[in-house]
Image (cartoon, rainbow, N blue to C red; front, side):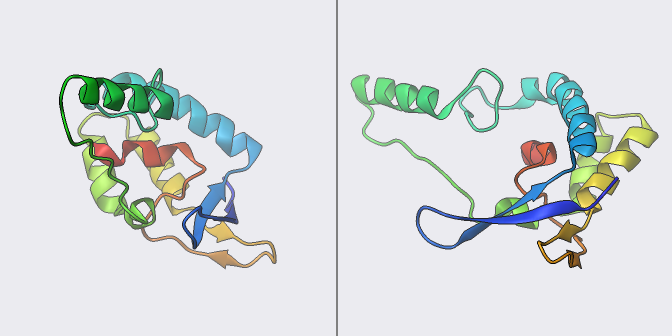
Length: 144
């Protein structure tokens, strides 16, 4: 397991979003874990949630919002919690995951991925004590 590469991208409204790009090997392992966790947790998410969902997209969310307007609703709410992925408490996320995952080795592996450092272009590493940078699959389970 390696540090993730820190990449900053410009946000549309200004500011920067930090991405954490795993190595290819770590990405393959994380994606396999993600596919299995999706089977376990996706059924608990709201059917009205479109973010990071298999078979759902931003276009589908817009289509659903348009349908609500045609039905006579006057308000559609879109919520984006600024920097939330950067602030996810590891202990709380792991506690919630442990309720559905009995495999201690898998839980330990997930924690190691969450705590992997962020390496910038100059090779300097920041240790993470919270958060799940966008770019890895674990930020999908913040809703659990």
